[in-house]
Image 1 (spheres, rainbow, N blue to C red):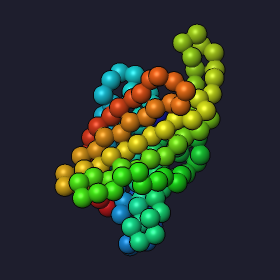
Image 2: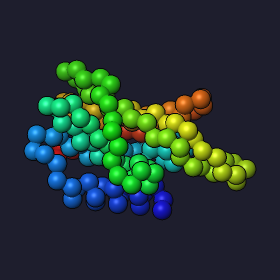
Image 3: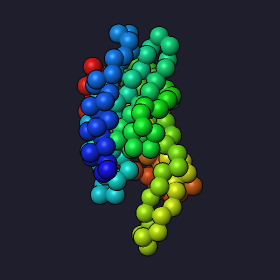
Amino acid sequence: MNLKTASAAALSVCTLMSFPVQAETYVCELRSSGASSADWIPPKAVVRHDPKTSEVTVIDGLIDEIYGGPIEAKIAVNNAKRITYSWNVRNVPVKTTDSTSTIVKNMVYRLTIVKATLEARETMKPVRFQNSYRAKGKCTVK
């Protein structure tokens, strides 16, 4: 399954799930900020945040492919202007440039949403690598 198909499937599953009324659900559509970022940051992410309990879950195509459903996220920043969620995706199998397989042990994701405009920026940094990847887009609240 490719990342775009997995993202669409994850979004479909998330919109069918019933979340408690008090939870905020952000559906974010993202465009990569570079050719290589498209492989690491899925085009859609869904974040469910319950402000009363501070519980946060996230799902995108990669998370759905690796874990089969939403995973826990944390609130990294929450102020009057923005909220930033962070999560880790672990043990992701990848192909290297010489066509061998390896495992990326830990990828750290951060999604920042500007509260006034719902503009979004997502970054991914694989731990122990120098690379970082970026995407930006817009969220809607469901």
